[in-house]
Length: 270
Image (tube, rainbow, N blue to C red; front, side, top):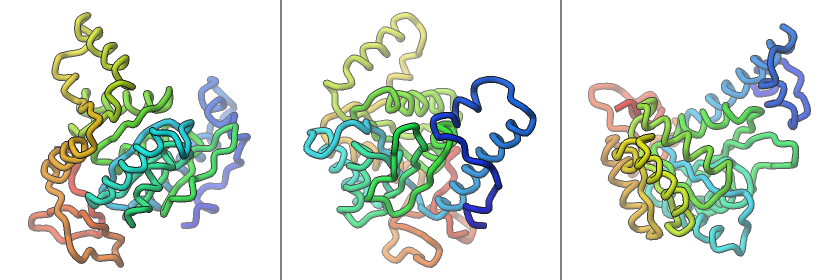
């Protein structure tokens, strides 16, 4: 099924998509249109991303561009994550998202983006091998988390904090497995960590919640943490000759007693 015929709905002004959805009750026809648009986003996302294999999601600001120290950092993160055999998944936009995708591209790995329609122009960055474009932020976040086995969070703003806190909340409430969350930039993230320590003192979170995070400036340490808590924990194994005709990448599941279906990701619920 082609994206253009998945669901027939009228695309609104991108600046109004989420506003129309969240502003309260609409007409029955408008509500059906909104539901159809979200369903189309999910359908297209599931179809296009099904064979990308295990991913590491890299989050970071869209406002730090080439020449900035954080851009260089995120590009190296993408290169190293790709070197581990993972697809690198980002929000598909500019800044540190572009940098991480560019690093994966440098390493010859798979570079994936989940882009979002915004009031201002945000085209998919030029370093993507596969991408989808969503109308709604909630669909975008579902796709980012659905295919990821770990999260690397580079310096960023409100959107990056939203993604980081979503990951921590899903892990804390056991909605997803205990995936590794790595914050890159100890100085940058210190105010955030101070807030978490304040929450702990006030009893709003438990001590083990602080253990959900790995905070470091050392990319060797960050990659070792990802290796231990993804490749080892989830039983991923490297293969020399993946079945390219099934869309398999450099990492695939270790499945006992069952034939491969072509999807290279194992059960994430453990």
